[in-house]
Image (tube, rainbow, N blue to C red; front, side, top):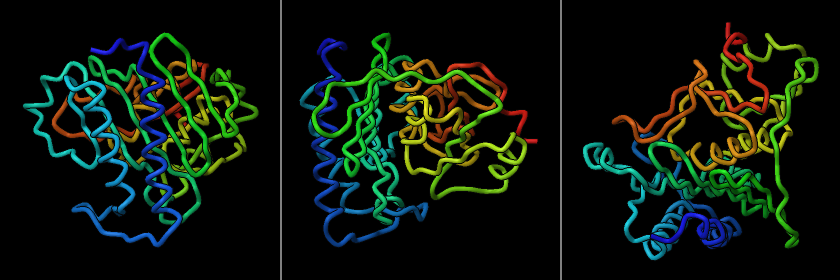
Length: 266
């Protein structure tokens, strides 16, 4: 297999190729269909999926690929995977349809149920985050400048910033915000919310509704390498491909200071 340390630049290139295909659709008329769960699907989702799948098969033909757009792989098969790629070709399809730019390409390498490499690319913003295990987390903006190392920030309970979903908010989130001391709320789409915490622009992102494993894996790697954590409500880090369902539990993406965020849900 290709050495793990040599892969981030290759995966960044693949994410950018997928982003180019997404932006071609984004610049024209967006045709929308519906999946079985009634979530939206566009030509951009499928174009990015095919580009990423083909490129990963060329790069690491020995590794299986689990993508949102090819997720019907039986757990009896998946459970034998020690290392595999976990992909969301277009995270934030609702934001894509709204044309607000807050959507990403997510590519993660999972090893022993943990994300050990992650790339999160927001093509409309020309913004990219990446990390690999024990190598730190980095941010790349437009203009071709050098990568910037990012760090999750330490907690100041008197000046809290909460990242929240642009398209998903409910009574649980409102309760959480009311129980905090006048937090600033930053609303954003896709896995960019986790990356906000990773780069120290937010203290916590509570996700109190359903997500799937491909929504979080790449950004979890970025956050953990930046010194933060992504855990369930009991404080246990999210793990991958451990059960038949590919749904995540409710979780908190949080910064560098350990804190019991679940107390604010009551």
